[in-house]
Amino acid sequence: MSKNLYIVPHDFTPVGDSALNYALHLGKNVHTEIMLLHVVESAGELAKTNAKLDALIDRQQIPAGVTITKKIIEGSIFEKIGLIAKKEGAQLIVMGTHGATGMQKLFGSNAMKVITSAATPFLIVQKDTPMNPIKSILVPIDLTKESLQIVNIAGDMASIFGAEVHVVGEKQNDELLSQQMKNRILIVKNQYEDRKTPCTVELLKSGGSYTKKILSYSNDNEVDMIAIAYHSESLLPQFDTFAQNLITNDKKIPCMVLNSKPASALYF
Image (cartoon, rainbow, N blue to C red; front, side, top):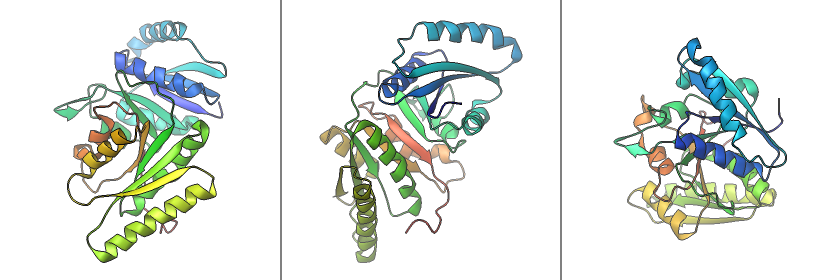
């Protein structure tokens, strides 16, 4: 098994190509194995799928230090992607989204349902997501402890690419909540400074949609990646629009999403 493994689920569509292209783009900066993963409904599809994956790999221009492997499994994408990523010790799942038409969709199904099925971080790209150098990563946090779980992962990505991290939160009208938010921002800022990661912080104005303010900040500051820890109290988290609206942003900025675990005492 490769020390750095990126899994790319590919459904033989243009967004699957976008995910593979972005994984190869990342591979220019870090030696990695890229595993192309295709989920079939029945064993009868295995031979045909294997040939299509071979042809897909043959068409690629593979950077030095990068290898592409393939894996075909039978079952449901909602179960298999997360299980394979855990079994193989993958660092990242680079996945394409077909965008939002009514409900956010991925491979004909809801993107968030796939993301919430795995503990491995996802990097979601859209069709024609630009292959820009990663110079700035936006890390939005909120008053929940779960939102802090993306901090280290975003910092690792920033270290690989020599990127600056932008940490944002929302101003709070309540005095107690305002102090809590300032404390969280300070904790994150200090953590990045300790690991010598360039970091800027900003509190966005209160009121209105936090998602819209995040995307507005991204546009104004030419952000190259958004990184969030996703958490929802909804019984059907795929209907929560916060993460969905970020991963389908109009600028097609790639979005890294970690399905967060319940907060522990490690978070203040």
